[in-house]
Length: 296
Image (cartoon, rainbow, N blue to C red; front, side, top):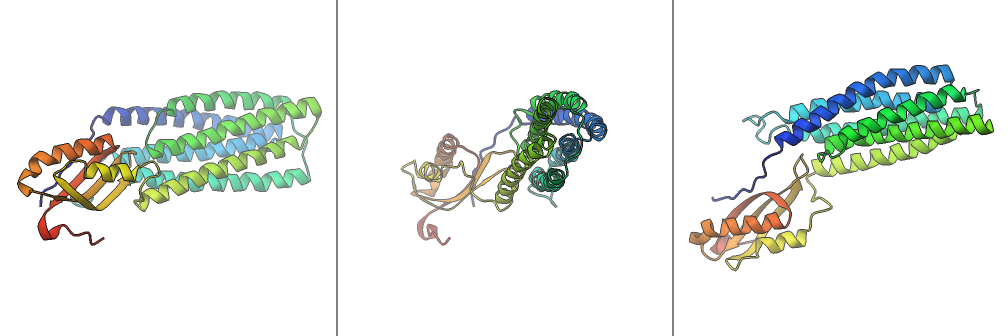
């Protein structure tokens, strides 16, 4: 059996950059979670305490993402022939469920405060929320550009936290200017919707990856055309496309060829056509004669 592979190298620098960004984000988020928790308790602000709780979940999410990234970098071996790349996907899925948990807790607390709103110290709330927004923006910048699902999951956590800080700022201004104590709880509920949506996106995408579903962005028609773009390639079957842990497309397929002797010349042309169709890694098996049967 003959096969063909197309690889894309040069990801080591990107992974190192992602690890550096995650580590800096983890340190800053952990430090500020404590500050915001204390500030929320002193100001008696649910928006701040919810943001602090979300920051604590961010710490867990960033730590999980950092550990998963390092695990994923381990080399493959006989016991794990595919390597540890799926650790990133598992971490991202755990972070998606974590977003749901945080959203549920904030919603529960917010409903209670709508019924019996406490006195909120608007000025302290505003100062801490503004500082939290600055910290979140710094972390978002460090995580920006990470293409793997694991880093994007951490980015979603921090984005939700930044929106929580924004909600806390808006609530503090409403408390200071209008004396509307329920603004704290109302804007906290807005954040829960955003967090729940981000969690759904992560859980859905990671589940599809673990099920090795064809990614939404893959043009299957173009990929099938690429497999038969050469006159020497008569047909293709057993075509399977999935997403690698780093976001690249992978493919395996059986290709029916006119003449098996010409396969060494045909293979590079098919791999080039697949790269143009967006496939970064391909494994192709040539077949001829009676073996060219699609029994999927």
